[in-house]
Amino acid sequence: MKKLVILTGAGISQESGLKTFREMGGLWEQYDVAEVASPEAWQRNPELVLHFYNERRKQLWDALPNAGHAGIAELEKYFDVAVITQNVDDLHEQAGSTKVLHLHGELRKAQSTADPDLVYTLKNWKMKLGDKCEKGSQLRPFIVWFGEPVPAIYEAIPLVKQADIFVVIGTSLAVYPAAGLVSYVKPGVPVFVVDPQIPAIYADHVEFIQEKAGKGVSILKEKLQSLI
Image (cartoon, rainbow, N blue to C red; front, top):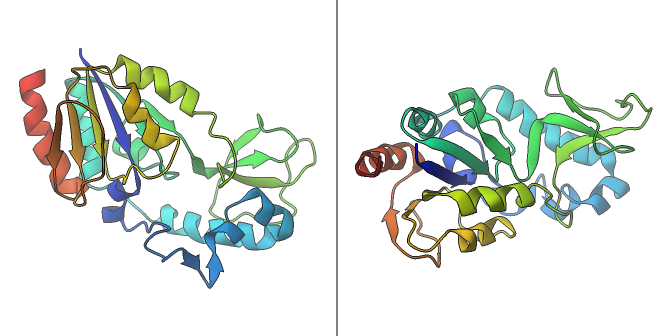
């Protein structure tokens, strides 16, 4: 089977009703994103940060995968598929994708503030001050905040280098280090981009599918048939 590597962003989850920071105009309840999604925000006002992520998590709890997620999962019948996602939702997994690497963390999980290796799956959408890990420290969202390193990028780079086909879906390719993954695609590898707004991408052999994820993935599947 050929190795198909797919990089996804917020655009693939929009049709499931999940909003992005950009859709909120960079604000949430009159707070700048930096005030709710950074280490400094956590130190300054952890209760607000928890409230922000509780609202996002509550939204996710009711969300369902859309046709884009389902179409990607179905591609596992024909390719060795690896999904690298910038999204913190688990809609790829819900749709049936079996190899998903989250660059920016996972909304349904919590992390110890004392030991980053202690990660827990949440049983419901609400986190609060006083929720502690087994070592007695406060739990924080298992999210890579602005200004923090992105350790999963070092797993993502080898995957991209192995790709026989590379696909970008629903991302503006404006956020680094994720946007830089395109530069690791081997010369000559077919690259497909699915997005209503075509991002700036510097790679050989790029084919654009200017559609939202649901319809765009359906078109993509047809095009990939010739590459099996």
